[in-house]
Length: 256
Image (cartoon, rainbow, N blue to C red; front, side, top):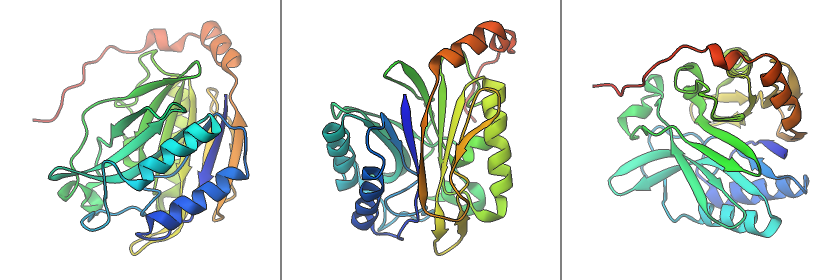
């Protein structure tokens, strides 16, 4: 499977402009099976979503559906969503037939007060696409390995983020750790540029199950990379070195 990871500079609070720019870049990398965009790629990361969050049937989601259908691919990325009386940091995965799945971010960023405005999700979501099982994760989820622990149910983990420059080395280190401990591919897609609160330098990367960097975007630049994933290599590695068979048993419980 061929995937393209987009390291975008996001224009604050301007969905139409951000979608237009994303499409321009995606068109420079034709033929991918999957295009992955950063966290809240249509608005920028907002911990106070009032006035910025989009409705469930937003033009952004409509664009994702149309692009996926037109180019026979999947499009994935997170959007700030207003549903009823609640706000969600929602990771959409849109298929070529315009059907879609979503994951609502579980670990809200309390340091930035995201938890005061957004509602946390409680579903761990794995989607299947063209023979690959794909775990959907958002930014701060990366710091909590139990949530992403591979139960022999996924092959690729997608982390979309707005991870600031001041902590980007932690981002890079944790992505490699998740690939190694879960014996899977890991794609980390982070933004560049600035917003009213932070500066971002990217660090968009694809890590293989051995923990090796396959390809990455240049730091600090709006760019994209395309990578071909090797399913045969992944399966052969898991058969030769079945580390997941020795994982500890655990049960997940929601906080009281």
